[in-house]
Image (tube, one colour):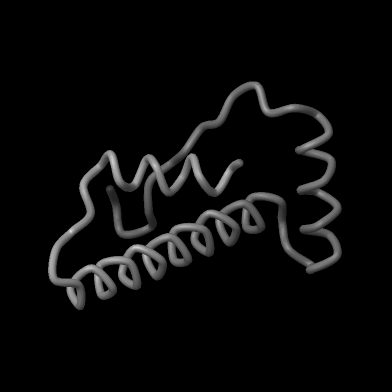
Length: 79
């Protein structure tokens, strides 16, 4: 990866998604490319923040939950 960053190619993006990205970018006076970069950066930052919160929560617990417990919580939340 260079100092400018990597190149990412995304194929088969639905036309409605491209149209929506173009409108969003236009409203914010950005290029669609910059808008997509901003969306990706925001998503990664939010995900990192959530993961840090989860890890901090787990650190305060006496034990980590087992995977079957987590699956049961997820399933229970969907019922």
